[in-house]
Amino acid sequence: MIFKSSHKSKKTRNSTTRSKTKHTPASANASKRKQRAMHILEQNFQNNPVVTWGLITLAIVFVLALLQSCQGLFSLSFDNNLIIKNEVPYEWKNLTYDATGRAHYVVDGEELTRTGVDVSSHQGLIDWEAVAADNIQFAMLRIGYRGSTEGGIRADELFETNLKGAQSAGLDVGVYFFSQAINVEEAREEAAFVLQQLREAGVTKLNLPVAFDLEPSPDYSGRADNLSPAETNAIARAFCTTIQEAGYRVIVYGNKVDLNRFDLVSLDEPIWLAQYVDQPDVNFNFLIWQYTSTGQVDGITGSVDLNLDFSRVSTSKSPK
Image 1: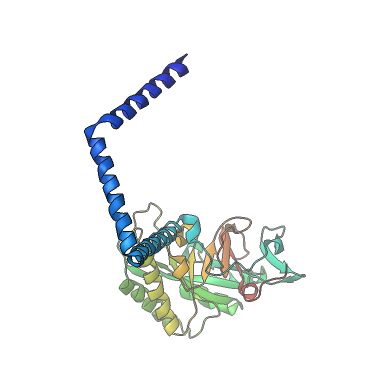
Image 2: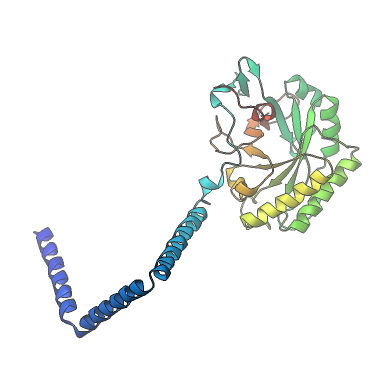
């Protein structure tokens, strides 16, 4: 009963509207204007067909260009921004875990990845000989950081100690800097600080890259939390270019949220991905994968980040 009453009411309103439209003088005048415009358009087409077709063609081209522009704009969603710098060359069927929870990438019985840790002064003093004996092959060491509020630059208190210990134990070493730069000038300042710290430590060459690590503050109130993708790219490029000009390799660190702050399509630097899952689900290439923050390694007190270095795999796609 209610449905019939509602339907009838809707029909009555529509009928009333159509009746008004049909008999009002304004409607009649609009109809005459429409007929006159169509007549003028028809005359113009007959008198100047080339010009008319040219205008139509330009209109079509404009609409197509507009649609393509909108498609590019909408592609910058979260998932689509994480794309396609290079196709992921890894076959995840080759990824396995041992009894201790460590990941390995093995093809035809040969392990192609290396396992490493990344550490800072938060880990305290480390027994690097014990770390090496526990099948850890490389280490990424924090060399310094910029404060997320006041913006001061500081060295990691244990960088030189960790550097000497890791190198003495035979590990390959890279470094990372925690950035909070808000413009390219500050990015270059951070890179210069990194190079100065390396010189003071007697370093002239690193086996692994210098990593640029730009993360938002935990409560999203930091000085660098509201950068645009264009600004973030420019800052990363300024840092990395300064480091490269000094002869070192570079890499950009981040999880999916961090990396979505960049325009990855135009970012040239390789990626160090942090994603704590059994298998990465991103659709862009990366060289290092930080796969857990709860690793256990002899010689290090408490939990530590564990990483896989895919450098040997990424240069040649593994067989299917």
